[in-house]
Length: 467
Image (cartoon, rainbow, N blue to C red):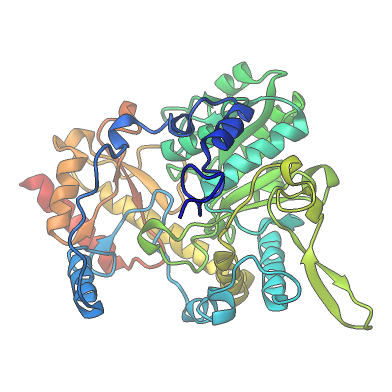
């Protein structure tokens, strides 16, 4: 039966060609394909999918899928030294116990009339992360660190009313592209060179690129390449001198042994919650956070939800709810919201809160010390191998470090292929991302690695280099 007014899909809103064209015209586009113009042509499907015939029973389907999954080799099967933004940490059983409860696992959005418990757990998560980073306001999580960094950059741009952002060249290229995509077309990212010996941000190049256009300087500590940025205060001071903000990305697992970025001038802090009790989930256990002080000019620029506590009409009882709800895209302002916010990773925020409550300050300190000691042991053992430099940069490292294989006569790809044959995931090959480093790999050591694990890696690399 034809439905009057519909020329296309009767059950898909805004599918009428005239309506589509009006919407496209409003945002300055000509066709729907313009929405995806940044996707390379070779990634687009130009033919029908080659789908198999439907299975006749649930049993057949399950057996087929399980057979496919068995082909995969996970970190439960192999010894893992990969990190680069998704790290293998120990997950206390209580984290899985709490986040698998029905009221958390299956919750969506949620409003006061049906979701008192989740509001309180997210408030507790925010409070615990705020204590960890020594700031006062923390958002309900974004999708990952990349989104948190990109959102924080846009926040800083609005606060400073400027359109240029300085970022370290020694950062994750995928994160840079995500930030660039988020900031286009009105905010420009300008990479700052790094010192080839230490890896630290080149302060001379930073000074040269700072200007009245600079909204914020973004850097990470520890850095993507693992070294600790000891010039954090100098970088923040240089930004503040020209009226810009300081934005620092941080790995929260380091904060038991390192000062929080606010101590060296950070105005906004961002990072990923994944190290705090969240499984890697095939690379999907990511969850970004942002933090600021309780300053209205910062708070009102958060696009995501903020939960607060308030007294009720009953003495001694408290309620939990949204703070400054109107500023959001789903609040009363709608199209005037700071930026669009959709489904987020609130479940991982609850999980991170459980982890932090379980660990406490002493536990986080022990975690950081454990990681520092084991990563330094791995570096010292790698230095014993002929032609191998355990840490490419002279700076102190936390958890991750760049291993230099240039003098071995073998490529990282060759070494990693042979490590796989021995049941080991080697470090991330940096030869494409950082061609100037040559044959270098980013290795990761956390609290889950034992001395035996590290010694096994050393033995395997030694055998590979001799072959």
